[in-house]
Image 1 (tube, rainbow, N blue to C red):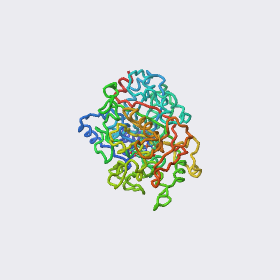
Image 2 (cartoon, rainbow, N blue to C red):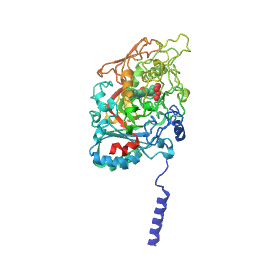
Image 3 (cartoon, rainbow, N blue to C red):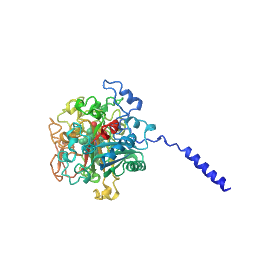
Length: 511
Ligand code: N7H
């Protein structure tokens, strides 16, 4: 009796062990895909895109998965570390860690996505710790982000997370999945592989916002709509999408101006700019409510929403104000063939003077400052980035809403874990932030100086309490100045990294 009972138990155990395959193909994606955002190519289309142009041959199996997919992750953990024991780290990097790194092709279809996607990137201090002395050809990367803080408009570095101050971070793991548990399990297994060869310096846990807010950042605006189409990757270019040579994002590829001087092992890698940008959401909402416009024919709520939309250049839905200047249009927002198809110029409108007209969109609006489209004549500016960030931190609490003020509780900090990829930081993120966003006179040649970008702009070197002036936001009086006396976005610092091609992990980086 006892023996047959044991046999049954063993039998059931064997049966259930057999019933659970070791590798369970995914049924739900790691990625979100709101209608407003561009779709990713299917693996087949991505391969075809690589065949047509002369610059064919992006190695999507070697390019880390995060670089070309944009702001689409459901959950993402950024784990910043220093390397204590380079020899042990290198031996694990070339074997166990390399086999866990997720490439671009894997992410393009749900069935090939891993349980948790793992990417890795190194700072200059990290490359030095690994004994890599090659010059990657990027001055910003070489000196690190802390040295850049003043130029970026960070009002001092007192708000910086201590881990970002200096050059103590050597690398970052980017772990993406559909659940927090998956991400945490993956981190635990990485930590057990690497043991004491690394130490944690800092971590940021990102997540797409819940429910209908999925894809929206913490101020409530749909994000990730306007991303560059990449030759050799994107097959169906959407109307109004900027098309860039792969070398604008990927080191060593066609279009990288330093292609001939890059170390050969870096081809297919990309510089990753990370910024922890805290968002003061109740303060933003309060400022917008207090500055509601008075455009005739609109309700009070519509006038308030319009003011907010004119700071960004899009409605919360994602519809561009250049095409929907007075009221939101959710059909337009959710149609990715139309929602990016505008230039800010309206030659079809009789008497439209491009140098002075801000009826549809202020010169200072965030999306105009960061992609001036027809304002620069030609789109081919060479200043594009692939944005791959994700919101972090909790939703606003009722207490914060009623106080109209963000809590000082560190557990309630929220914002954007900003990530930008490019082949040249000086031409990409730095240029955008310093020459456009923080420059009160940009867009040049306009009859009214726009002021800084209201969301992320601050003149380099100005103190945090200095009000930031913008104009153009009131369509009835475009010369009217608004004094932004609160910070909507506070920089908590960051670092510059290089996201290497996967092949380099068992090559130069672990030699
Ligand atoms: Fe920005 N926001 O909610 O206000 N961003 N951004 N950004 N941003 C964009 O078109 C936001 C930041 C760019 O091609 C949208 O995808 C916030 C930095 C660029 O038309 C919204 C923060 C930099 C674009 C936001 C933040 C940029 C863009 C519209 C910080 C670079 C595309 C959605 C907390 C220096 C422009 C979309 C184009 C769009 C927001 C940071 C750059 C809603 C909250 C630091 C290039």
